[in-house]
Image (cartoon, rainbow, N blue to C red):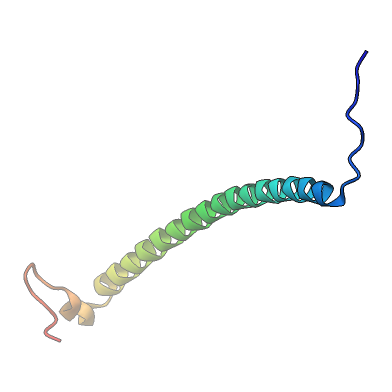
Length: 86
């Protein structure tokens, strides 16, 4: 036969137990949301890196196309060690 502890009608003690359980639940929720936020931030960083790579590649190709298609842009070509002198 199993005996149960009598119900505790002490409101302060019940309140402490309730608040401890609530705090534990909220703590778990915060940790889950932080994990989700980290995952989403990683996805944003990957997408930004792809965008930067595409932008740099497009800019380099556009510059090379402008130099090779436009003979008057030959002044844009620099030899090793040269600077624009700005």
